Structure formats: structure tokens, C-alpha cells
Amino acid sequence: MSIPRTILVLQPYRRILAIPGALSFSAAGLLARMPMSMTGLGIVLLISDRTGSYGKAGVLSGITVLAAAAANPLLARLIDRRGQTRVLPVAGAVAALGLSVLIWSVEAGWPVGWTWLAAAVGGACFPPYGSAVRARWAAAVTERGQLTTAFALEGSADEAVFVVGPVIVTFAATSLHPAAGLAVAICCGLTGGLALAAQRGTAPAFLSVRGSAAQRPGLLWSRLLPLCVVAAGLGCLFGSVEVVTVAFADDNGDRSLAGWLLGVWATGSMLAGLLLGTLPGPGRPLLRLRVGAALLAVTVALAGLAPSPVVLGGLLLLSGITIAPTLISATTLAAHYSPATRLTEGITWVTTGLTAGVAPGAALAGVVVDAWGASAGFVVPVAGGLLAATSAWMIRARTASPVGPGALEDETVDKSSAPASADLWRRTDA
Image 1: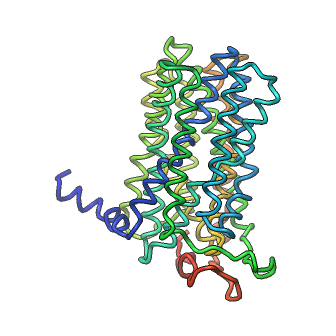
Image 2 (image 1 turned 45 degrees about the vertical axis):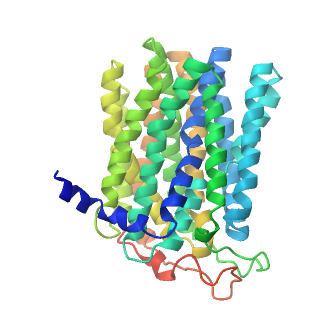
Image 3 (image 1 turned 180 degrees about the horizontal axis):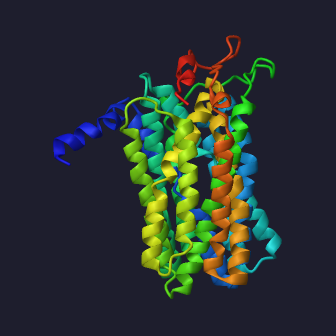
């Protein structure tokens, strides 16, 4: 591809990043989300090194993720009501403290109950930075199709996190200290979160606490709930692949390979997400969700047959290509189905489904690996992929048609306008 043609293809990204403040809040959000790919793997590397059990490592990682799944919607609702500037710094600091206590409790040999409690606090208080950044984009974009491009950019940023994060955490844990990877994750999350919260000018509108419950717009559960089920299946797949890949690399004599293999997986997703953002118009998110989930289930099943790390890397790259379009489609649909002043919460419910699936996926994969080995562990992500694919294809097109309620006229809003026009949430070709 020639340089002028490359510039033309990337033009949609140049336009949205030219929006005042967009580059700054997107970059801060990228750093804040680094723990997404580092915390779980860091816990697995630390606990498996100290105890020799992938089952225990998977359970502790699952506690962190499950706590996040339970608390993130509440945090998101609090953000929509009180604002990002107020909530993000406090929640981020408490999460960092919880994970720091987790490290200390493991190294000091505290009773396991304290370690579990610290993991729960660290997971429950970690803010939904991805949803917060997407809410800022919704407040910033004004043209048709820009929201899809912005969500594609953030989806690719998520995947960039999963390209770089596993490599960093694996290197730190295997070369410096078993707890070093988790410590780096803590620093990244806290620094990025504070930087994002400090950018007041691009923070979206938030509901005043003076508004009564009757005045607040409702979420469209008939549309969001099926997306949550799809996301839970995908989360099971992601959480289990992480554990199984570490075990696969360990079986092949080099645990550090896990970071590279997971990075290759995320690279495929990142490239696919970037390509999706260059396509004109909002596209057909429901169709992308259905096809993407089905292809992801098939490609992960093929990865389970890999005889060597090289072959596994190639199959994970192929599998990764299906990830970003599937996740971007799910979050795009969630945005269409959420009132403007509850957008953070609406998107977070879908990501909560994703998170809720990670916990049992990681724990079950650890148990299967301990009992039957790494190759057998791939049964768990295949099952998660099948759940996601089946649920996506069971969503009827009529059900997926958005009504775009927007914000109620009698809401008490702390800024002069809602994050975006109601028309923005009505757009979809699903």
C-alpha cells in the first residue's frame, strides 16, 4: 500500500483525534487500562510460582475478576451521577491499595483469607476506564459514523494493551521478581486513571443526585441482557485461554513464551479493529457480532490442536482477527441501547458480562490443566466460544433494533447538554 493511500485509509482516525482533548483522554485511558491484560496474568504468575498450583492461581485471579464484574456497574452508575473527575481517582487509588496488599500478603505468608479479600477489593474498585473513555468519545463526536470509528480506535487500544501487557508482565515476573509484573500493572492503572480524571474539559455530562429515581432514564434490558450473555461466553474464552497458554508455554519449557503468544493473539485483534474503523458508516453491528462470535469459536477450537508454540502462535493470530470486530460490535450495540446520560453504565453492563465470564473460565481452566494438562484445558475456551456464538445467533434482528431513548427531558443534568444528541443513539443498520 502506497504512503498516500495509507494516509487516506487512516483519515477517519485523524479526524476524530483532531477533536480538542481527544488524543489526551484516549492516551490516558490507554495507560489506565493496562491492568486489564496484566493483573490476571500477574496473579497467575505470582501464585503459581509461590504455590506450584495453577488451580489456586486461577481461583485467585477469578476472585479479582468476579469482584470487578459485581461492582463495575455500580461504579459506572456512580460515575454517571457524580462525574468521572470525582469517582475515578478515589476508586483507582483503593484498587491499587487492594492489589498492593495482595502482593504483600502472599510474600509475607498471611492466611489465605486476607489474600482473597485483597484480591476482591482490588477487583471491585478498579474503575471501568474503557467505558469512561467511550463515554467521552460519545460526548465529543458530532458526525455520522464517527462513533463507530472512535469505538474501533478504543477497541484497538484495548487490544494494544493485550499485545504489550502480557509481554511486560511476563518479563517482569520471570526476570525480576514473581510479584514485579503485578506491581507494574498497579502503577500503570493508577497513573493513567489520575491523568484521565484530571482532564475535566472533556468529561461527559452527569446526572445530578438531586434527580429522583423516577426522573432517571431506564436501561433497555430486553436489548442489553442478550449482549451480556454473549459477552459472558467471550469472557470465559478469554480468561481460560490466558491460563491455558501459560500452562502450554510451561509444558514446552519456557514460561516466558506465554506473554509472546498472548501478544500475538492480541495483535491480530488490534489490526482487525483498526481496519474496521476505516470502513465508512456505522455498518451492521449485529451481523458482525453473530459472524465474529461464530468464527472465534471455530478458531479457538483449532488452536487447541496446536502441537507446538509456533503453530499455536499462528492459530492464535488467526483467532485474534475475530476478537475486535466482535467486541466493538457488542459495545456499539450497547451504546445504541443506552440513554445518553447512562451511557457509561450501559456499556459497563456488557463489559461486566465479559468480566463475569472470565472468572469461571480462568478457574475452570486451571482445574482442568492441573488434572489433565494444557492441551485438555482448551476445552474450556471452546465451550465459552460456543456459548457466545449460540447466544449471538439467537438474538433476533427485530429485538436488536434500537429505540434510542436518549435522555429524559425532565432530568437534572449538571451540564448544559447531554453527552450526545438522542439521534446519535438511534443509528444502526443491525
